[in-house]
Amino acid sequence: MLTNFSTVLRACAQRNGAAVVMSARTYANFTNEATFEIKKSDIFKLDEGPATQVVMTRDEGLQYYRTMQTMRRMELKADQLYKQKIIRGFCHLYDGQEACAVGIEASINLSDHLITAYRAHGYTYTRGGTVKEIMAELTGRRSGIAKGKGGSMHMYCKNFYGGNGIVGAQVPLGAGVALACKYQGNNELCVCLYGDGAANQGQIFETYNMAALWKLPLIFICENNRYGMGTSVERAAASTDYFKRGEFIPGLRVDGMDVLCVREATKFAADHCRSGKGPILMELQTYRYHGHSMSDPGVSYRTREEIQEVRSKSDPISLLKDRMLSNNMASVEELKEIDVEVRKEIEDASQFATTDPEPPLEELCNHIFHNNPPLEVRGTNPWSKLKSVS
Image 1 (cartoon, rainbow, N blue to C red):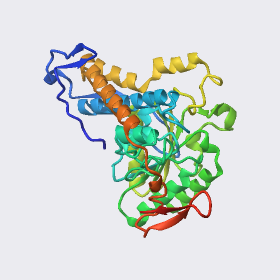
Image 2 (image 1 turned 60 degrees about the vertical axis):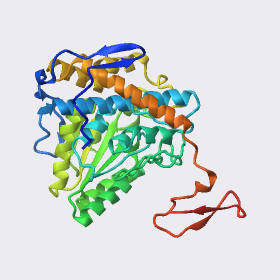
Image 3 (image 1 turned 90 degrees about the vertical axis):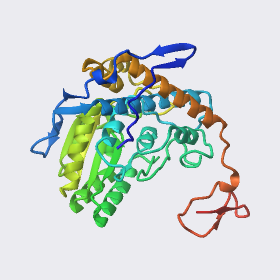
Image 4 (image 1 turned 120 degrees about the horizontal axis):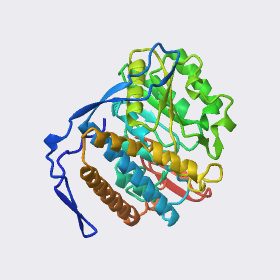
């Protein structure tokens, strides 16, 4: 679970010379928890699905809001730095899909395992990476979470295995992690994420078979954001019921824009895995606001009106905010204060990421192996040697 942050906020904050005044109401006047009716999940090969009446506490709501805002602002800052040519290479942004990462993380433990594809900034953050480490990795700096050598697609931290650049290749790796969980008998599980574009890969179907055969504690999650690169799901898949693709694996189709829907579905899936029933497949119906990558403007295969409609009707942050305000779980001023703090954190991290030194050449080949004696690595020609230190 993510670390709870303090619910005691300052009475006022100074930003750009203007004071942001907090509500005069005391925090004792807020509702500590509320019950919400959420959208029913579609189910496949299951007798029942996740609960549709769920409880969220005020602390949980504030935590989810701050985390999603941090992810959103971090991605918007990455977009800005990329356009300034400070971030280079491949870069895939996650804004619009924040409810997926936050809802999943709210329902598993940090001792559980997670692996995803190349749209990985958000998961790096929810798994325990800091904004500074992520931003510094994006700019290729020494203090980055992969020492500045991984970039956007290759970030890692404890029990988080990336960040993988080859489409669909992370799925069999996730099965391997789940096999280790079962072999060690530690009641842990692996969450293995891929997109609708990768869902047609043969290696994913091979992994379904192996995971079902061995009853691995593995949650397959297809983040269906409607477009595989620039191709809509309808043009790419004969069946767009991705949650049924496991054939012999039970499945759920979930509203991926609602953090509570994702949270409850993931709890259900985690209980399924931990009870020894084997793998389960979840399809999260979500949406990305940016293009597939920074080289894709994102409007040649969809209209600006479509993007705006999703923003206005289904934005995950706005949906959570409206729930909290309408149930007296927070005030507008309190949420604005969180926004101010998040913006400052992102700006500070951005400043750090553009001033931190780049890794020196002699460290280029370090960390190829773990706990290994130093070895020589060939450079760009047989006479150029570099040293690798674990």
